[in-house]
Length: 150
Image 1 (cartoon, rainbow, N blue to C red):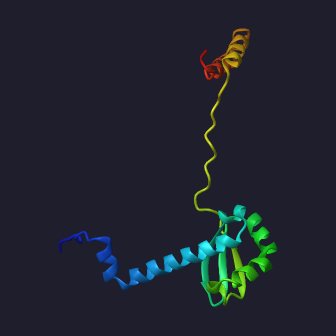
Image 2 (cartoon, helix red, strand yellow):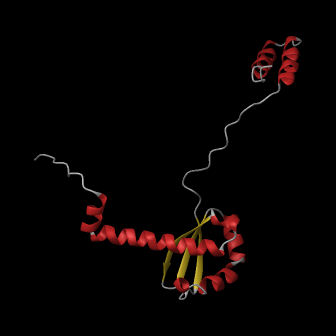
Image 3 (cartoon, helix red, strand yellow):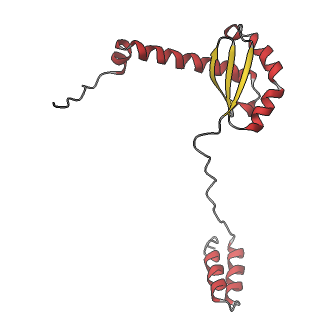
């Protein structure tokens, strides 16, 4: 038994020959369209924290990044429901359900950078020279190296 790799095909050919893939792409496009409609009614600060999960049987399920934003959305639920029902795509909407799901990849804190003026660097270097403790002196000298060069 030998393994024969499948020959590479153009994307359009693969999409045209696979009904399951066509349904998946159509579903993704539908969800994207509904997300864009939803964003029109959300406050700008909420948009990045709220994503449409499903819309089935009149129930809209929204994924919210944390409890804080979910609480804010719950306070606005009645207004949001009425506004969404005015759009033809959400005319059958009866209920909004919120689920809190933190992001899969936690946000990385910004890299710490030190920027010191030349004058601050000179001051720290002078302090290092007047210090008797060798560990403190080394730490101050390392810190002084981050100063801008005159």
